[in-house]
Image 1 (tube, helix red, strand yellow):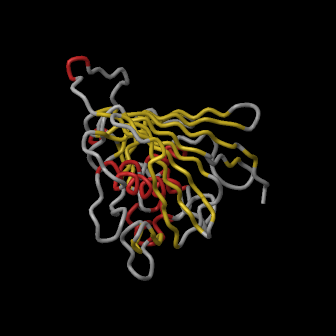
Image 2: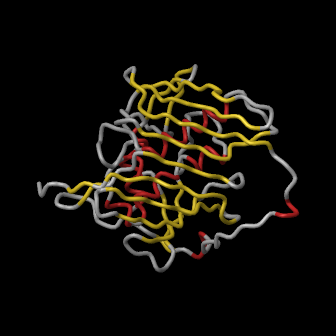
Length: 274
């Protein structure tokens, strides 16, 4: 079934990438970025990936690495052409803060900030308290994401860990597509371009009329080490408050174990019956 969805999601021009570069930080989105809430907007997951790419490319310094990336979603992210403007807003010798803005139709749709911190030798005291998920090989095939519409979700391959239920679950995901057509995708960009999927992998309610919508208005990612590989593991819990606000929390994994955490604040709204 996943393969059938990928075939449907491949546009008439045979698109097999998330974005096409137009040069100078400008891009055009493909069908594989299409969101689940609105067919005319992009899913935040690949948007986070392409913005991470621009942050990586902006005046890179090997002695520093990105340790936190925070995205604020300022409105609908339309599909099609857009540009990303990136700058350093807090320079420093050992710590610096970057900002990237995705601008579509001359409006800032997403604003990201990223802390880059100095690398150091701390192996002697390194420790991780988060429990590692079962591996991809131990997980089973999973097609529950098929209930969500949109080209981005259709691009994914997913595997589920036993015990999955509404509001709590562990899922591995990956996508076969590069972030930018004809250009290599770093592991950081590839995996950051999947994180926002967390809000849909253990939803408390099913999508559709008469249910509830729960889009996130932000995405905050904290990284205690650099991620690697093509599979992203999401150990996710979803909370709905009683006053229309919810929270999705995830411990992020790659094949080597936990590498960070992500949080998404949600606006929870009931949908009409039709």
